[in-house]
Image 1 (cartoon, one colour):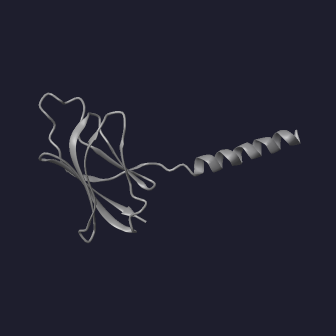
Image 2 (tube, rainbow, N blue to C red; image 1 turned 45 degrees about the horizontal axis):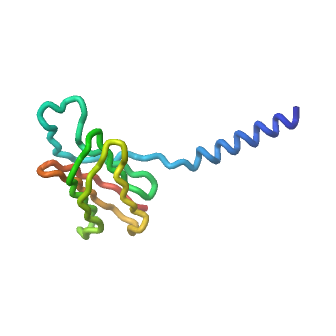
Image 3 (tube, one colour; image 1 turned 180 degrees about the vertical axis):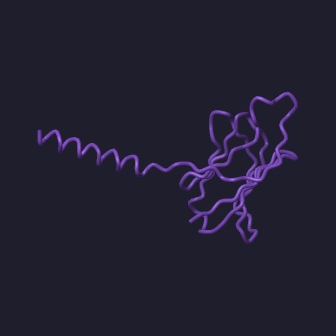
Length: 122
């Protein structure tokens, strides 16, 4: 009986340690002007911006090609610039672990469409 209690306590502690260290992605609030193409009402092609630990993630329900992605610091310095594509099954990942602490703005553009989000690196 004592061994069973000890085993249950050890398993509970192990589960708490494992699940307590899992990082959850937080959705970045955005300002957007993203017009859907005619006839595409069921799925949104607007990118979704997420921050998970030391990474930014860009996701979409549709393939997005030729996306202009820029990150600027709050003093206006451009710290990241890329032209890329986002696929449906894979998030586009931007590592931000080397950025100094502070507030940043991410802009994702495709033609006249844009999504702008703000995030903090601590």
